[in-house]
Every structure is written in structure tokens, then in C-alpha cells.
Image 1 (cartoon, rainbow, N blue to C red):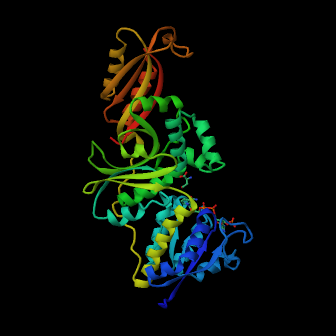
Image 2: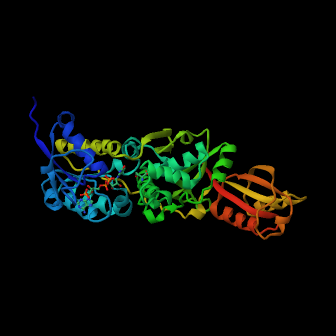
Image 3: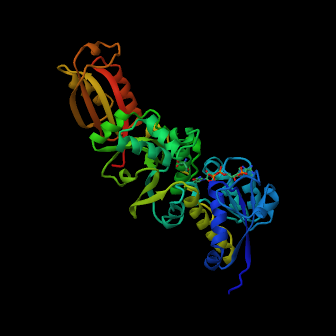
Length: 445
Ligand code: NDP
Ligand code: HSE
């Protein structure tokens, strides 16, 4: 039996993820020690209530409410409490005491990542966060290390399991948004308050983290354009299906070039989008996550798996723990994150993509020419146009409501959001148009 020196591990939080991390660490300690070359001794678990029931049975004597003393006794601190404070202060305290830190706290990293990485670099410590985006999926390390010699062009991520579950139910079962959300809640995917998921806040935090890593630049979470899925209708999903698309909530991080100045920037945005059924992301069903990376030299890569779940996420946390422990054994300073590209985050108005616009129009001579003229006036090029006859238009008080109407489904070539918004405003104000039924971005082509 090899005798190793022990590294002291402090765990902050024993909820869904923390309790599983403690369980795996206690169960597989010997195996991990042989991988690391040092023992990993869980010296304590800080919680709010030491008597609360846990997901798994853990030794009572490990629990404490004195997080600060626990942090000061540790070589490596694992923060799995969530929230901003006191998590932020505890991580700073741990780094300043010379400990490495492992966290899965996306909200904290999206908001205070710059401060925390700077603190780590200053003291030569390391901050690991594989679990903060995509749960069990290894995506942080591939972006930071494996692709460090490449140039990432674009990331398309399905990074929120709850919304993917809801949209998948709507697509596969023809469910309504409300019905699918109720199922997601009943199955425990959605929180009692699902706002962070369905309004895209959770995905926006992950987009900020991924964009910062991929483009070596600070990306404040407030700069991430965010739209949730609450306005998506069963009708839109059905129309998408018939046209060969699936609706997904995407976190998109993209290197963009200003067509006028030629300057590079970053677009970071979260919104529902139409994805071709031929794209690998279309095959991501249920609550699964996937991150599709387009890199200049490597080409297309996809990372797929469980984006949440206590046990699954604990795998990512323990992977980080092993890395941190190996660094302790090898010695030397932590490897700083590189944020030296200083690319600006561009406004959504400047982003270029393709769009699908569904219109109800008056079915009369010259209407198509009028519609085509509106697109042309705004320099938006039409890629495809399909017309089908529609039932009489809805109850809107417009001259068109009394006429026979037709449905037009128009897909554009790439156009700026600004130009598209102006086009849609003109369409909506034209008497030939009874209703702009839907405007969806088309991504992944
Ligand atoms: P939980 O809410 O299940 O657990 C939080 C734990 O932290 C509890 O044990 C709680 O103690 C403890 N805690 C909270 N506040 C304090 C405090 N002020 N002092 C001491 N202890 C405190 O969270 P999760 O396990 O779900 O998530 C943990 C982190 O992992 C979060 O940052 C989350 O975003 C991230 N994450 C979670 C995933 C998941 O699937 N759950 C997936 C990916 C990332 P007590 O039990 O006594 O109340
Ligand atoms: N609420 C998140 C999801 C959990 O649905 O994916 C992981 O961040």
C-alpha cells in the first residue's frame, strides 16, 4: 500500500451536487489518490443546517456551519452553495489563503468572473469551473486547453435542459408550452419558479462563460442579448417541423466582423431559433445539453450529455478536483485564463443571421410584388418564399380581414437584425399584410 501525503478538501454545500461530490469522494478516495499521487481527505462540509436531511447518507461529524474556519484549513475548496454571496467572499477568501478552488457556480462566474480570475492569478492559485456550463459535459477544458491553439469561430449551445425538454415535447408530442412546462415541473427538470430557465437567464450566464473562454475576452452577462421561450407557440413549432426545422433555445457565441470598419467583435446571445433537422443539434432531445463548436482548423466539434443532475454534475466537479490536486502535487503556479484579446461585445442590431417570417397577406394581384419591394427597400434578400392559401384572417380590425388571405413563409439570406426589424415594421404597417404571424431566426446553416 503506497503512503501518500494528504490534501485537505473543504466542501461548501451539500445539496444536489455537493452531497454527490462528498459521496463519490468518500467512496472512491483510494482510486482518486492513486490517480493524483496524494490522498484527498474531505475535512469538512459547510452547510446552513447541519441536521437537514441529505440526498445521500454522509458522516454527521463532517458537517459544520463555520465555513470560514473550514476554508482556512483546506488545500482545495469546492464551492457548491450557489448564489452570489457568501459564495463570492468565500471563494476570494480561499484563493487568498493559497487554496485552489473548484466551483459550479455559473451565476457567480457570469457576474464576477473577471474579479475572481484576477484574484486567482494574483496569488498563483487556480479556479476550476467545468460544472458551470453544460453540467457533466466536458466543454470548459476543451475550450481552454484543447482548442487553445485554434481560433473558435462560433459556438451554438443547447445549454438549458429544462427549455430543451419543453421545446422537444412541443416538437415530438405536439404539446403546448404550458403543458410541456407542467410536465417538466412534475418530472423535476423545472424549478418551482422556472423563470431563470424559460426566460433564458440560466443560458445567458452560460453563454457569458463560454464566450469569454472561446474569444479570450471579458463578456459581461449584461451584454448577452437574451430572449426566452415564453412566446413560442405550438403553431410555430408545428410550422417549423413542416418546413424541416426544429425550434431550440440556443446560446450563441460568435466572432463577428463589422462590415464597415472590418473590426472584430463578439456576439453573445440567447434566443429561440430554427435549426435544420439535418444539423446535429436537432438530435438533442429531452433535457440533454450539447455544445456545437465551429473552429477554424478543427472544423465542427460537438459535446453532448447531461447538462444537470447531482451525480452527473459531480463527475465534472471531481474531474476539476483531480486536476487541482495534481497541480498541488506537481507544484508551480496555476495557469491563468487568457482574456487578452479584448474583443468588444457587439449590439444585437449588428448581428447578421437568416430569418423565417410568416405573414398572412391579402390574396390579391400585386401583393407579392409589394411584399418583395418591402424586403428590397431594406436591403434584405429573400432566399425562399412559399405561399399557401389560408382561412379568412383573424379578428384584427384591418381592411385585410374582409378579404381572402394567403400565408407566406419567407426565409431570408443573412441580414442584420436592424434591417430585419425595419423590414418587419414596414410589413406590419402595410395594408397588404393582415398579420405578421411569426419571426424566427434561422441558425446553424
Ligand atoms: P442546492 O441548492 O441543492 O444546494 C446548496 C447547498 O449549499 C445546500 O447544502 C445548502 O445548505 C448550502 N448553502 C447554501 N447557502 C449557504 C450558506 N450561506 N452557507 C453555507 N451553506 C450554504 O444547490 P445545487 O447542488 O443544485 O447547486 C450547487 C451549485 O452547482 C450551484 O452553483 C448550481 O448553479 C451549480 N450547478 C448545479 C447543477 C444541478 O444539476 N443541480 C448543474 C450544474 C451546476 P443546506 O443544505 O443546509 O441548506
Ligand atoms: N436549470 C438548469 C437546466 C440546470 O435546466 O439546464 C443546470 O444549469
